[in-house]
Length: 124
Image 1 (tube, rainbow, N blue to C red):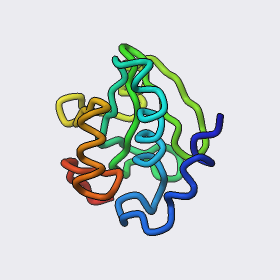
Image 2 (image 1 turned 180 degrees about the vertical axis):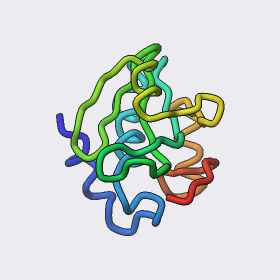
Image 3 (image 1 turned 120 degrees about the vertical axis):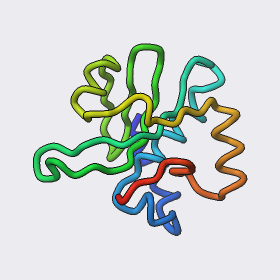
Image 4 (image 1 turned 90 degrees about the vertical axis):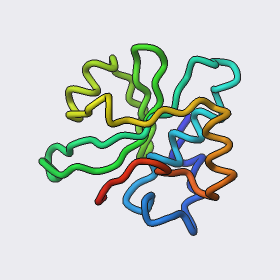
């Protein structure tokens, strides 16, 4: 299933933090859709360093972790990689990430009226 398409209806009026992409919305929807049947899933917000055209630029990003695996459904993709590989490719510092269970995410969305980021401070 294409999670990007599923989240398209949420793109209008989303906060500026999500306008460059749909990672916060896509990851949040994935957790809502799968979090009850797979309670070990965790939503993660962190800073990644870009590659290719955006090489060297650090920006906020969201993904799902399922144990030692990462699921990234942003921009209509479905990437599943071992956590170690994903963190190495994105130059992600684990101690600078924020993690949310399904219930924690629901509360944040209801309280803030947006998909995030909530605690992560980034320029982009």
